Length: 518
Image 1 (cartoon, rainbow, N blue to C red):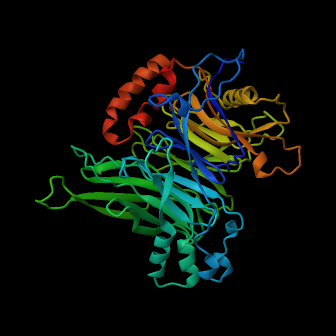
Image 2 (tube, helix red, strand yellow; image 1 turned 180 degrees about the vertical axis):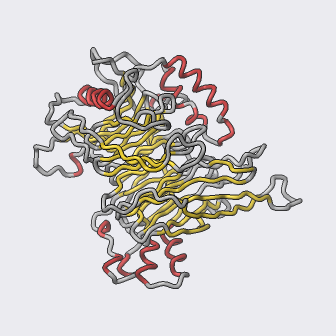
Image 3 (cartoon, one colour; image 1 turned 90 degrees about the vertical axis):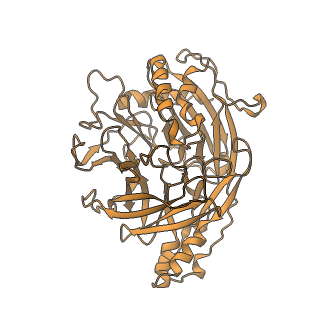
Protein backbone atom coordinates (compact mmCIF):
# COMPACT_ATOMS: atom_id res chain seq x y z
CA UNK A 1 0.00 0.00 0.00
CA UNK A 2 1.40 3.48 -0.81
CA UNK A 3 2.35 5.86 1.96
CA UNK A 4 -0.15 8.41 3.16
CA UNK A 5 0.23 11.48 5.34
CA UNK A 6 -2.20 12.23 8.17
CA UNK A 7 -2.00 15.89 9.16
CA UNK A 8 -4.65 15.76 11.87
CA UNK A 9 -6.86 13.26 13.67
CA UNK A 10 -9.09 14.66 16.40
CA UNK A 11 -11.35 12.52 18.55
CA UNK A 12 -14.73 14.06 19.42
CA UNK A 13 -16.29 12.05 22.28
CA UNK A 14 -20.04 12.08 22.84
CA UNK A 15 -20.56 13.65 19.42
CA UNK A 16 -23.00 12.29 16.86
CA UNK A 17 -22.78 13.68 13.30
CA UNK A 18 -25.69 13.22 10.86
CA UNK A 19 -24.59 12.37 7.29
CA UNK A 20 -24.80 15.41 5.00
CA UNK A 21 -22.81 16.88 2.12
CA UNK A 22 -22.98 20.28 3.87
CA UNK A 23 -22.31 19.02 7.39
CA UNK A 24 -18.58 19.80 7.06
CA UNK A 25 -17.63 22.95 5.17
CA UNK A 26 -15.19 25.86 5.19
CA UNK A 27 -16.27 29.48 5.53
CA UNK A 28 -14.74 32.44 3.71
CA UNK A 29 -13.04 33.27 7.02
CA UNK A 30 -11.03 30.04 6.75
CA UNK A 31 -12.87 28.19 9.53
CA UNK A 32 -14.23 24.66 9.33
CA UNK A 33 -17.82 24.22 10.52
CA UNK A 34 -18.85 20.75 11.65
CA UNK A 35 -22.58 20.20 12.16
CA UNK A 36 -23.39 17.71 14.92
CA UNK A 37 -26.67 16.69 16.49
CA UNK A 38 -26.70 19.35 19.22
CA UNK A 39 -23.89 21.79 18.37
CA UNK A 40 -21.74 23.27 15.63
CA UNK A 41 -17.99 22.87 16.11
CA UNK A 42 -16.03 25.82 14.68
CA UNK A 43 -12.42 24.84 14.01
CA UNK A 44 -9.67 27.14 12.73
CA UNK A 45 -6.38 25.60 11.49
CA UNK A 46 -3.36 27.04 13.29
CA UNK A 47 -1.38 27.36 10.04
CA UNK A 48 -1.04 31.11 9.47
CA UNK A 49 -2.58 32.11 12.83
CA UNK A 50 -0.39 33.73 15.50
CA UNK A 51 -1.89 32.67 18.85
CA UNK A 52 -0.75 31.23 22.14
CA UNK A 53 0.15 27.55 21.96
CA UNK A 54 -2.10 26.83 24.93
CA UNK A 55 -5.12 27.66 22.76
CA UNK A 56 -4.20 25.13 20.06
CA UNK A 57 -5.46 21.55 20.28
CA UNK A 58 -3.60 18.74 18.53
CA UNK A 59 -3.67 14.98 18.47
CA UNK A 60 -0.40 13.31 17.57
CA UNK A 61 -0.51 9.85 16.04
CA UNK A 62 1.94 7.09 16.76
CA UNK A 63 4.58 6.44 14.12
CA UNK A 64 3.66 3.89 11.50
CA UNK A 65 5.48 2.44 8.55
CA UNK A 66 2.82 3.60 6.13
CA UNK A 67 2.79 7.22 7.33
CA UNK A 68 5.23 9.97 6.52
CA UNK A 69 6.44 12.26 9.27
CA UNK A 70 4.59 15.57 9.15
CA UNK A 71 4.04 18.36 11.60
CA UNK A 72 0.60 17.84 13.15
CA UNK A 73 -2.01 20.39 12.18
CA UNK A 74 -3.39 22.19 15.22
CA UNK A 75 -6.81 23.73 15.68
CA UNK A 76 -8.44 26.61 17.50
CA UNK A 77 -11.87 25.51 18.64
CA UNK A 78 -15.11 27.08 19.73
CA UNK A 79 -18.64 25.71 19.85
CA UNK A 80 -21.99 27.10 18.81
CA UNK A 81 -24.38 25.37 21.19
CA UNK A 82 -28.02 24.48 20.53
CA UNK A 83 -30.01 24.69 23.76
CA UNK A 84 -32.88 22.56 22.35
CA UNK A 85 -35.47 25.15 23.38
CA UNK A 86 -38.27 25.51 20.83
CA UNK A 87 -39.49 29.02 20.05
CA UNK A 88 -42.45 28.09 17.87
CA UNK A 89 -45.27 25.65 18.60
CA UNK A 90 -46.76 24.78 15.21
CA UNK A 91 -50.06 23.35 16.57
CA UNK A 92 -50.93 26.87 17.75
CA UNK A 93 -50.60 28.08 14.14
CA UNK A 94 -52.60 25.31 12.48
CA UNK A 95 -54.41 22.17 13.66
CA UNK A 96 -54.13 20.31 10.32
CA UNK A 97 -52.06 17.12 10.23
CA UNK A 98 -50.03 18.54 7.35
CA UNK A 99 -48.36 21.06 9.65
CA UNK A 100 -47.25 18.48 12.23
CA UNK A 101 -43.49 18.53 12.86
CA UNK A 102 -42.21 15.30 14.42
CA UNK A 103 -38.76 16.84 14.87
CA UNK A 104 -40.11 18.70 17.90
CA UNK A 105 -40.12 15.42 19.86
CA UNK A 106 -36.31 15.24 19.90
CA UNK A 107 -34.93 18.67 18.88
CA UNK A 108 -31.64 18.59 17.01
CA UNK A 109 -29.76 20.54 14.36
CA UNK A 110 -30.56 19.74 10.73
CA UNK A 111 -28.60 22.12 8.47
CA UNK A 112 -26.07 24.96 8.50
CA UNK A 113 -25.39 27.64 5.86
CA UNK A 114 -22.45 30.06 5.92
CA UNK A 115 -22.55 33.62 4.61
CA UNK A 116 -19.68 35.30 2.76
CA UNK A 117 -17.10 37.12 4.85
CA UNK A 118 -17.25 40.79 5.88
CA UNK A 119 -20.95 40.90 6.76
CA UNK A 120 -20.79 41.53 10.50
CA UNK A 121 -19.47 44.56 12.38
CA UNK A 122 -16.18 42.73 12.98
CA UNK A 123 -15.88 41.78 9.28
CA UNK A 124 -16.82 38.15 9.85
CA UNK A 125 -19.40 35.75 8.47
CA UNK A 126 -22.87 34.84 9.67
CA UNK A 127 -24.24 31.36 10.30
CA UNK A 128 -27.77 30.24 9.46
CA UNK A 129 -28.95 27.29 11.56
CA UNK A 130 -31.98 25.09 10.89
CA UNK A 131 -33.26 22.74 13.59
CA UNK A 132 -35.56 19.73 13.46
CA UNK A 133 -38.56 21.86 14.49
CA UNK A 134 -38.08 23.70 11.17
CA UNK A 135 -36.94 26.88 12.94
CA UNK A 136 -34.33 29.11 11.30
CA UNK A 137 -31.96 31.36 13.25
CA UNK A 138 -28.95 33.58 12.46
CA UNK A 139 -25.79 33.48 14.58
CA UNK A 140 -22.59 35.52 14.73
CA UNK A 141 -19.41 35.85 16.78
CA UNK A 142 -19.71 38.17 19.78
CA UNK A 143 -16.02 39.19 20.00
CA UNK A 144 -13.30 36.64 19.31
CA UNK A 145 -14.50 34.53 16.38
CA UNK A 146 -11.61 32.07 16.80
CA UNK A 147 -12.20 30.89 20.37
CA UNK A 148 -14.93 33.17 21.70
CA UNK A 149 -18.67 32.82 22.06
CA UNK A 150 -21.09 32.79 19.15
CA UNK A 151 -24.54 34.21 19.91
CA UNK A 152 -27.95 34.14 18.28
CA UNK A 153 -28.73 37.36 16.43
CA UNK A 154 -32.17 36.78 14.93
CA UNK A 155 -35.09 34.39 14.78
CA UNK A 156 -35.80 34.28 11.05
CA UNK A 157 -38.85 32.03 11.46
CA UNK A 158 -40.73 35.01 12.91
CA UNK A 159 -39.95 36.97 9.74
CA UNK A 160 -41.20 34.09 7.58
CA UNK A 161 -44.41 33.80 9.62
CA UNK A 162 -45.11 37.52 9.31
CA UNK A 163 -44.60 37.40 5.54
CA UNK A 164 -46.88 34.36 5.20
CA UNK A 165 -49.57 36.04 7.31
CA UNK A 166 -49.75 38.95 4.85
CA UNK A 167 -50.67 36.65 1.96
CA UNK A 168 -54.26 35.53 1.33
CA UNK A 169 -54.21 31.78 1.98
CA UNK A 170 -55.37 29.08 4.38
CA UNK A 171 -53.85 28.62 7.86
CA UNK A 172 -52.24 25.37 6.66
CA UNK A 173 -50.51 27.02 3.71
CA UNK A 174 -49.30 29.90 5.88
CA UNK A 175 -47.79 27.43 8.34
CA UNK A 176 -46.12 25.43 5.56
CA UNK A 177 -44.55 28.59 4.11
CA UNK A 178 -43.03 29.44 7.48
CA UNK A 179 -41.62 25.95 8.07
CA UNK A 180 -38.09 25.98 6.66
CA UNK A 181 -36.73 22.68 5.35
CA UNK A 182 -33.40 23.60 3.71
CA UNK A 183 -31.06 26.59 3.43
CA UNK A 184 -28.24 27.81 1.18
CA UNK A 185 -26.24 31.08 1.09
CA UNK A 186 -24.77 32.52 -2.11
CA UNK A 187 -21.24 33.88 -2.41
CA UNK A 188 -20.65 37.52 -3.29
CA UNK A 189 -20.92 38.24 -7.03
CA UNK A 190 -18.25 39.90 -9.13
CA UNK A 191 -20.00 42.86 -10.77
CA UNK A 192 -17.26 43.47 -13.31
CA UNK A 193 -16.75 47.00 -11.93
CA UNK A 194 -13.52 48.72 -10.92
CA UNK A 195 -13.20 49.48 -8.09
CA UNK A 196 -15.40 46.66 -6.82
CA UNK A 197 -18.44 48.02 -4.92
CA UNK A 198 -18.30 47.43 -1.17
CA UNK A 199 -21.86 46.06 -0.96
CA UNK A 200 -23.43 42.85 0.25
CA UNK A 201 -25.27 41.17 -2.62
CA UNK A 202 -25.37 37.67 -1.14
CA UNK A 203 -28.72 35.91 -0.75
CA UNK A 204 -29.93 33.33 1.75
CA UNK A 205 -32.34 30.91 0.07
CA UNK A 206 -34.82 29.13 2.34
CA UNK A 207 -36.87 26.20 1.06
CA UNK A 208 -40.10 25.33 2.83
CA UNK A 209 -42.86 22.73 3.06
CA UNK A 210 -45.12 24.70 0.70
CA UNK A 211 -42.78 24.06 -2.26
CA UNK A 212 -41.42 27.60 -2.53
CA UNK A 213 -38.09 29.31 -1.93
CA UNK A 214 -37.75 32.59 -0.04
CA UNK A 215 -34.77 34.87 -0.70
CA UNK A 216 -33.41 36.98 2.15
CA UNK A 217 -30.58 39.50 2.42
CA UNK A 218 -28.75 40.73 5.51
CA UNK A 219 -29.48 44.35 6.42
CA UNK A 220 -26.32 45.48 8.23
CA UNK A 221 -27.89 48.79 9.27
CA UNK A 222 -30.48 46.96 11.39
CA UNK A 223 -28.57 43.67 11.94
CA UNK A 224 -31.36 41.49 10.59
CA UNK A 225 -32.40 39.43 7.58
CA UNK A 226 -35.06 40.90 5.29
CA UNK A 227 -37.12 39.16 2.60
CA UNK A 228 -36.44 40.38 -0.94
CA UNK A 229 -38.32 37.85 -3.10
CA UNK A 230 -39.83 34.35 -3.29
CA UNK A 231 -40.49 31.78 -6.00
CA UNK A 232 -42.52 28.57 -6.28
CA UNK A 233 -40.39 25.61 -7.43
CA UNK A 234 -42.52 22.53 -6.60
CA UNK A 235 -45.82 21.33 -5.17
CA UNK A 236 -44.03 19.22 -2.52
CA UNK A 237 -41.57 19.90 0.28
CA UNK A 238 -38.26 21.38 -0.89
CA UNK A 239 -35.49 19.21 0.58
CA UNK A 240 -32.24 20.51 -0.94
CA UNK A 241 -30.93 23.79 -2.38
CA UNK A 242 -27.66 24.63 -4.10
CA UNK A 243 -26.36 27.81 -5.79
CA UNK A 244 -23.94 27.97 -8.69
CA UNK A 245 -21.28 30.67 -8.81
CA UNK A 246 -22.27 34.10 -10.09
CA UNK A 247 -21.34 35.03 -13.65
CA UNK A 248 -21.25 38.64 -14.86
CA UNK A 249 -23.42 39.11 -17.95
CA UNK A 250 -22.51 42.77 -18.32
CA UNK A 251 -21.34 45.61 -16.13
CA UNK A 252 -23.52 45.69 -13.02
CA UNK A 253 -25.52 42.55 -13.93
CA UNK A 254 -24.81 39.01 -12.73
CA UNK A 255 -26.58 35.66 -12.96
CA UNK A 256 -26.56 32.38 -11.06
CA UNK A 257 -28.57 29.17 -11.01
CA UNK A 258 -30.39 27.72 -8.02
CA UNK A 259 -31.06 23.97 -8.01
CA UNK A 260 -33.83 22.64 -5.79
CA UNK A 261 -34.89 19.07 -5.01
CA UNK A 262 -38.32 18.02 -3.77
CA UNK A 263 -39.54 15.02 -1.79
CA UNK A 264 -40.86 13.31 -4.93
CA UNK A 265 -37.34 13.12 -6.38
CA UNK A 266 -37.76 15.95 -8.90
CA UNK A 267 -34.99 18.50 -9.43
CA UNK A 268 -35.56 21.95 -10.94
CA UNK A 269 -33.27 24.88 -11.71
CA UNK A 270 -34.05 28.59 -11.40
CA UNK A 271 -32.12 31.34 -13.15
CA UNK A 272 -31.43 34.23 -10.77
CA UNK A 273 -30.43 37.67 -12.02
CA UNK A 274 -29.27 40.61 -9.93
CA UNK A 275 -28.83 44.16 -11.20
CA UNK A 276 -26.76 46.78 -9.40
CA UNK A 277 -27.85 50.41 -9.79
CA UNK A 278 -26.07 53.37 -8.18
CA UNK A 279 -28.23 55.84 -6.27
CA UNK A 280 -27.74 59.53 -7.12
CA UNK A 281 -26.17 61.16 -4.06
CA UNK A 282 -24.03 64.21 -3.35
CA UNK A 283 -23.76 63.93 0.42
CA UNK A 284 -22.06 60.54 0.78
CA UNK A 285 -18.41 59.99 -0.03
CA UNK A 286 -19.09 56.37 -0.95
CA UNK A 287 -21.85 55.60 -3.48
CA UNK A 288 -24.97 53.71 -2.42
CA UNK A 289 -26.64 51.06 -4.55
CA UNK A 290 -30.02 49.51 -5.21
CA UNK A 291 -30.48 45.84 -6.11
CA UNK A 292 -32.92 44.38 -8.60
CA UNK A 293 -33.67 40.65 -8.31
CA UNK A 294 -35.55 38.48 -10.80
CA UNK A 295 -36.03 34.71 -11.09
CA UNK A 296 -37.31 32.46 -13.86
CA UNK A 297 -37.10 28.72 -14.68
CA UNK A 298 -34.40 27.55 -17.08
CA UNK A 299 -36.94 25.90 -19.36
CA UNK A 300 -34.90 22.69 -19.53
CA UNK A 301 -36.07 19.65 -17.53
CA UNK A 302 -33.44 18.42 -15.08
CA UNK A 303 -34.99 15.39 -13.39
CA UNK A 304 -38.69 14.43 -13.31
CA UNK A 305 -40.38 13.01 -10.23
CA UNK A 306 -39.48 9.33 -9.80
CA UNK A 307 -40.19 8.78 -6.09
CA UNK A 308 -36.48 8.35 -5.25
CA UNK A 309 -35.18 10.71 -2.57
CA UNK A 310 -32.31 13.07 -3.36
CA UNK A 311 -29.59 12.90 -0.68
CA UNK A 312 -27.29 15.67 -1.90
CA UNK A 313 -27.14 18.49 -4.47
CA UNK A 314 -24.02 20.44 -5.40
CA UNK A 315 -22.95 22.71 -8.27
CA UNK A 316 -19.43 22.29 -9.64
CA UNK A 317 -18.02 25.55 -11.00
CA UNK A 318 -15.48 25.05 -13.78
CA UNK A 319 -13.45 27.96 -15.07
CA UNK A 320 -14.27 28.81 -18.69
CA UNK A 321 -17.21 26.39 -18.83
CA UNK A 322 -20.78 26.12 -17.64
CA UNK A 323 -21.34 24.95 -14.06
CA UNK A 324 -22.32 21.29 -13.71
CA UNK A 325 -25.02 20.12 -11.32
CA UNK A 326 -24.33 16.93 -9.37
CA UNK A 327 -27.08 15.29 -7.34
CA UNK A 328 -27.13 11.90 -5.67
CA UNK A 329 -29.83 9.29 -5.25
CA UNK A 330 -29.39 5.85 -3.72
CA UNK A 331 -27.03 3.90 -5.99
CA UNK A 332 -26.81 6.54 -8.73
CA UNK A 333 -25.06 9.83 -9.40
CA UNK A 334 -26.80 12.32 -11.70
CA UNK A 335 -24.99 15.01 -13.69
CA UNK A 336 -26.71 17.88 -15.51
CA UNK A 337 -25.42 20.75 -17.60
CA UNK A 338 -27.37 23.34 -19.63
CA UNK A 339 -26.96 23.37 -23.38
CA UNK A 340 -24.75 26.31 -24.43
CA UNK A 341 -21.75 26.79 -26.75
CA UNK A 342 -19.48 26.39 -23.70
CA UNK A 343 -20.78 22.87 -22.98
CA UNK A 344 -18.82 19.83 -24.15
CA UNK A 345 -21.92 17.82 -23.25
CA UNK A 346 -25.41 18.77 -22.12
CA UNK A 347 -28.52 17.28 -20.58
CA UNK A 348 -28.64 14.75 -17.77
CA UNK A 349 -26.27 11.80 -17.37
CA UNK A 350 -26.77 8.98 -14.86
CA UNK A 351 -23.81 7.03 -13.47
CA UNK A 352 -24.46 3.80 -11.55
CA UNK A 353 -22.21 3.59 -8.48
CA UNK A 354 -20.31 0.40 -7.70
CA UNK A 355 -19.91 -1.02 -4.22
CA UNK A 356 -16.39 -0.60 -2.80
CA UNK A 357 -16.02 -3.71 -0.64
CA UNK A 358 -14.01 -2.54 2.36
CA UNK A 359 -16.17 -3.84 5.22
CA UNK A 360 -19.30 -5.84 5.96
CA UNK A 361 -21.31 -2.62 5.74
CA UNK A 362 -20.16 -1.61 2.26
CA UNK A 363 -22.94 -0.71 -0.15
CA UNK A 364 -23.47 1.77 -2.98
CA UNK A 365 -26.96 2.53 -1.63
CA UNK A 366 -25.85 4.69 1.31
CA UNK A 367 -26.40 8.45 1.64
CA UNK A 368 -23.96 10.91 0.10
CA UNK A 369 -21.79 12.62 2.72
CA UNK A 370 -19.59 14.83 0.56
CA UNK A 371 -19.21 16.16 -3.00
CA UNK A 372 -16.17 18.13 -4.16
CA UNK A 373 -14.32 18.99 -7.37
CA UNK A 374 -10.57 18.83 -8.09
CA UNK A 375 -9.88 21.38 -10.89
CA UNK A 376 -6.32 20.27 -11.67
CA UNK A 377 -7.50 16.76 -12.59
CA UNK A 378 -11.08 17.50 -13.68
CA UNK A 379 -12.39 15.05 -11.08
CA UNK A 380 -15.59 15.05 -9.04
CA UNK A 381 -15.26 13.05 -5.83
CA UNK A 382 -18.26 11.78 -3.89
CA UNK A 383 -18.14 10.09 -0.50
CA UNK A 384 -20.88 7.84 0.87
CA UNK A 385 -21.69 7.17 4.50
CA UNK A 386 -20.44 3.58 4.20
CA UNK A 387 -16.88 4.97 4.06
CA UNK A 388 -16.36 4.68 0.31
CA UNK A 389 -15.16 7.26 -2.24
CA UNK A 390 -16.37 7.45 -5.83
CA UNK A 391 -14.50 9.36 -8.54
CA UNK A 392 -16.03 10.84 -11.70
CA UNK A 393 -13.30 11.34 -14.31
CA UNK A 394 -13.26 13.89 -17.15
CA UNK A 395 -16.24 15.66 -15.63
CA UNK A 396 -16.29 18.65 -17.96
CA UNK A 397 -15.58 16.65 -21.13
CA UNK A 398 -17.05 13.14 -20.93
CA UNK A 399 -18.01 12.04 -17.39
CA UNK A 400 -17.26 8.43 -16.50
CA UNK A 401 -16.55 6.31 -13.42
CA UNK A 402 -13.89 4.34 -15.30
CA UNK A 403 -10.43 5.87 -14.81
CA UNK A 404 -8.12 6.41 -17.80
CA UNK A 405 -5.10 4.14 -17.91
CA UNK A 406 -2.78 7.04 -17.00
CA UNK A 407 -4.88 8.18 -14.01
CA UNK A 408 -3.68 6.96 -10.61
CA UNK A 409 -6.66 8.40 -8.76
CA UNK A 410 -9.63 6.04 -8.81
CA UNK A 411 -12.61 5.08 -6.67
CA UNK A 412 -10.87 1.91 -5.50
CA UNK A 413 -7.62 3.71 -4.65
CA UNK A 414 -9.29 6.48 -2.63
CA UNK A 415 -11.55 4.04 -0.78
CA UNK A 416 -8.51 1.93 0.10
CA UNK A 417 -6.56 5.00 1.25
CA UNK A 418 -9.39 6.30 3.45
CA UNK A 419 -9.83 2.83 4.93
CA UNK A 420 -6.10 2.71 5.72
CA UNK A 421 -6.36 6.08 7.46
CA UNK A 422 -9.29 4.75 9.49
CA UNK A 423 -7.38 1.64 10.58
CA UNK A 424 -4.34 3.74 11.49
CA UNK A 425 -6.15 6.44 13.48
CA UNK A 426 -8.40 4.15 15.52
CA UNK A 427 -6.89 3.19 18.91
CA UNK A 428 -8.22 -0.38 18.71
CA UNK A 429 -7.52 -3.00 16.07
CA UNK A 430 -10.09 -2.83 13.27
CA UNK A 431 -11.43 -5.72 11.19
CA UNK A 432 -13.84 -6.18 8.29
CA UNK A 433 -16.70 -6.10 10.80
CA UNK A 434 -15.92 -2.45 11.61
CA UNK A 435 -17.37 0.24 9.33
CA UNK A 436 -15.97 3.76 9.06
CA UNK A 437 -19.18 5.71 8.51
CA UNK A 438 -18.11 8.94 6.82
CA UNK A 439 -20.71 11.56 7.75
CA UNK A 440 -19.07 14.62 6.20
CA UNK A 441 -16.28 15.21 3.67
CA UNK A 442 -14.73 18.18 1.92
CA UNK A 443 -11.51 19.01 0.10
CA UNK A 444 -8.94 20.77 2.26
CA UNK A 445 -6.76 22.19 -0.52
CA UNK A 446 -8.73 21.56 -3.76
CA UNK A 447 -6.26 18.80 -4.48
CA UNK A 448 -5.03 15.61 -2.78
CA UNK A 449 -5.66 16.57 0.86
CA UNK A 450 -9.14 15.90 2.26
CA UNK A 451 -10.93 16.51 5.50
CA UNK A 452 -13.65 14.18 6.70
CA UNK A 453 -15.44 13.06 9.83
CA UNK A 454 -16.26 9.43 10.55
CA UNK A 455 -17.64 7.23 13.29
CA UNK A 456 -16.57 3.62 13.79
CA UNK A 457 -19.49 1.23 14.02
CA UNK A 458 -20.15 -2.50 13.96
CA UNK A 459 -23.43 -3.37 12.19
CA UNK A 460 -23.38 -6.91 13.57
CA UNK A 461 -23.66 -5.52 17.10
CA UNK A 462 -27.35 -4.83 17.74
CA UNK A 463 -26.94 -3.39 21.25
CA UNK A 464 -28.30 0.11 21.87
CA UNK A 465 -25.77 2.93 21.70
CA UNK A 466 -26.88 6.10 23.49
CA UNK A 467 -25.60 9.58 22.63
CA UNK A 468 -22.84 9.61 25.26
CA UNK A 469 -21.20 6.54 23.69
CA UNK A 470 -20.96 8.01 20.19
CA UNK A 471 -17.38 8.99 19.31
CA UNK A 472 -16.66 10.82 16.05
CA UNK A 473 -13.24 11.52 14.57
CA UNK A 474 -12.11 14.42 12.39
CA UNK A 475 -9.28 13.60 9.97
CA UNK A 476 -7.15 15.63 7.57
CA UNK A 477 -5.09 13.38 5.30
CA UNK A 478 -3.50 13.24 1.86
CA UNK A 479 -5.06 10.49 -0.24
CA UNK A 480 -2.68 10.42 -3.21
CA UNK A 481 0.85 11.46 -4.09
CA UNK A 482 1.34 14.86 -5.69
CA UNK A 483 4.09 17.40 -6.35
CA UNK A 484 3.27 19.93 -3.65
CA UNK A 485 6.10 22.37 -4.49
CA UNK A 486 4.71 23.25 -7.90
CA UNK A 487 1.18 23.37 -6.55
CA UNK A 488 2.11 25.77 -3.75
CA UNK A 489 3.60 28.22 -6.27
CA UNK A 490 0.53 28.01 -8.49
CA UNK A 491 -1.74 28.35 -5.47
CA UNK A 492 -0.02 31.51 -4.25
CA UNK A 493 -0.30 33.07 -7.69
CA UNK A 494 -4.00 32.23 -7.74
CA UNK A 495 -4.50 33.73 -4.26
CA UNK A 496 -3.01 37.04 -5.37
CA UNK A 497 -5.37 37.09 -8.34
CA UNK A 498 -8.38 36.54 -6.06
CA UNK A 499 -7.57 39.30 -3.59
CA UNK A 500 -10.59 41.41 -4.61
CA UNK A 501 -13.13 38.69 -3.79
CA UNK A 502 -13.43 39.74 -0.14
CA UNK A 503 -12.43 36.29 1.12
CA UNK A 504 -10.27 36.34 4.25
CA UNK A 505 -6.53 35.70 3.90
CA UNK A 506 -6.76 32.66 6.18
CA UNK A 507 -9.13 31.03 3.71
CA UNK A 508 -7.13 31.97 0.62
CA UNK A 509 -3.87 30.47 1.91
CA UNK A 510 -5.37 27.44 3.66
CA UNK A 511 -4.15 24.95 1.05
CA UNK A 512 -0.66 26.45 1.00
CA UNK A 513 -0.51 26.48 4.80
CA UNK A 514 -1.02 22.73 5.12
CA UNK A 515 1.60 21.99 2.45
CA UNK A 516 4.44 24.26 3.60
CA UNK A 517 4.34 23.49 7.35
CA UNK A 518 7.70 22.17 8.46
